[in-house]
Image (cartoon, rainbow, N blue to C red; front, side):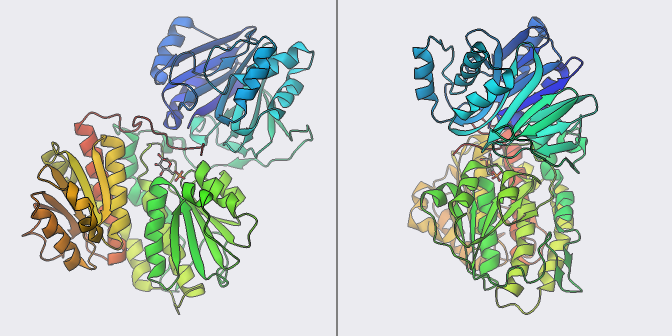
Length: 603
Ligand code: G6P
């Protein structure tokens, strides 16, 4: 959802700025731009992906040692050169990049127009350079002008700004992520660490209302009122190569293949089946003793992982429910001191999920974030955070992080079983099964069945996914993945719900993927028969030892046997591969599906 970056040094900034923008493309890719400052301020921006910008800079040759850049996911105004960032004021002395939404931009525009300002874009962002320019004209220095302009803004935003004649980048955030990178030869700013990871791994996470003044030789952080603030720097443990494609055609395929490693990292050091221990972050034994129930809040793939978590918890005697975060904020579930509210979020920056957590901040409920990003807003705003340790995920379609979330929620379910549910000890068979999952995923990755099936059923009108129990969230996730990257009509249903409506959609030109887990398989088999008698081909995704499906299903994709509760994690990998290959056959832009962004920082 828009990527911001800045590079502040003594030498040419453009190359690193363009690298950072390419690294940030997963946040938006409908237009991109840079502003570079030497003696003059030069802006170059284009509709389209960063490649279009690269062609433009090759012609226009902007240069400077201080630079800001932006890759856009449109909110106000369609993708166009004019709406691309950076935006400038009337005199071109100020350039601004912005992520988020300035809610009072219309009234600010009206006021500015009445004072003679002219606008060249439809964006909310453009008010900022005009506000700053007015204050510069009134004689304020750039830092004061920036602070005063920011004080006029309502909404959620991360902003970076340069002013002609001042070798500094000014930045602030409110509800949108912004991280400072401290390098040896230059300092950086970005919406997300992968932007500058190949240049530095030393970061400072900015907090809401922080103002960062970034110069070639250092970074000062103050409050909006100008009072100095101490923000610690951290060294991130992601290697630069983690955010590269490493020979794969797409990040998505790379990340699917990284799952065995990511899963090992999620579990490593956290289980000791023999000693009957589950260690989760800094959460000491007994942390959850007061908890009676769990309420998940999440969006997209993380919501599906939460539904998986609900199933794991309920089976362990812990009442649990999952809410779509956007709906939770609109209509909050009542919570109290005995509720554990778990925000599941890969990025830790999803606006809807943050809004849901903030909705209950004045209650006694305990909050926990299950996230991939150390230092993310979610991790900082909750009582406790557990990290899924999946490494950076760049493909817009979440893959490895779903698996790592489910593994982590499995560990959490075990803790809650013992501390808050009716369990007397940890379930050793489950924990051992979890430790074997990476190897089972490896076996799936070695097979080509999903690719063959994607090819065999390429010409259908609709793709349905059904599952029961643990298979249900997997069916939802399978359909989400399929529709987001193939652009085909795909839907996921609870297998038993099919006959209550969706069956009307099933014809000979739709195909149904049925998830079997080793639990309630006979019932799912009945649902498959219902589909078959309407002429639709059925592909079963099932553990190897499942009986009775080979004579009914048109195709079977097998996954290794193991505990039924974990079987869904394996079926999910099959469905990821299916979607990937189906999208590849159709020539889709797999890592950057149309209209979507990886990190959605607006509600
Ligand atoms: C966007 C992404 C999805 C992701 C969802 C929630 O829609 O495209 O892949 O599942 O946001 O993101 P989060 O970072 O909160 O898990």
